[in-house]
Image (cartoon, rainbow, N blue to C red; front, side):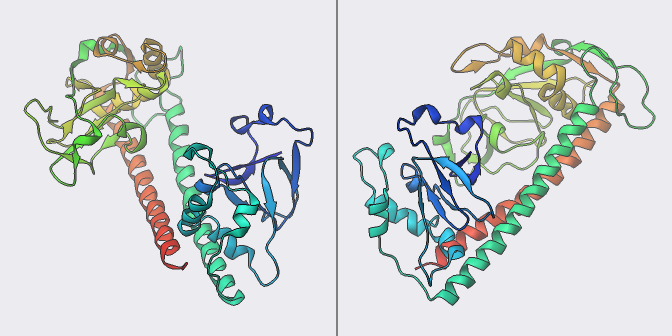
Length: 365
């Protein structure tokens, strides 16, 4: 069984995409042969279409529609065009259904859409070009995934496991056991002040909104790409603050932290702000809050159902397992270097995706 997603195209079915309970008819599944296109009429306006480019048949939900190109037309061209911005605009024009979320593009509708098509040699050139670009993007995505997997492995090994007082991997010269400290004894706490997305501007002072901790920033925040005007009660970073979101969708969401490396950054609302004393390295604190036993402890303190919250009073009670400051510094600097590699790889990947988007706009009529 395979499924079709907007993000990944034709992909092995997982529990996330298990929709068998929605299928009412007896003939629940169909076959997609090599060289056949498959699309979801309900999500066609989002680009839910792909080509079976494998050398095997796969089974899919009977709700999907399959089709083939006729002679003198290139699969490699149409697998790009069918997901292009130009095609999606046409789907939205021709889709049937009153409500936007219930619009469909059934095959009789799709087959009636007209578009300009080049000669077969040019179709082949365009298809081959985008296949090469997609392969390059996939290569950089694998590199990024590999770096993140390496980071996750080091996080597992460089912090003590539950019930232990030393990690499995340490830098040379460090042998002492780690000690337990309560966060409220080694830090001061405050809150960011309320800003929302509507306050963002093209220029002004750099600002961090709590939602970006989930989507943008790694452990140490050195560059901020959102801006806003300073308000009367704005909270401005001095550099070295550890910030923890005070609300999120799950307990795991808010059990994370980042260090604001620079001064002069506005810290928005829904942020818990921690300033450590001289015995705790900020980067080490951010990493240990976000991983291992400390993350689990913080998750347990989160309160709420549809939206969960964590307050400074909860953070004060968190117990940390800490080595001496020199080892904290070594760990913090190590993961700072790892995060820089991840960020550099992410920039390369983003530029390639932007390049593809630009070519999609300019290489089709």
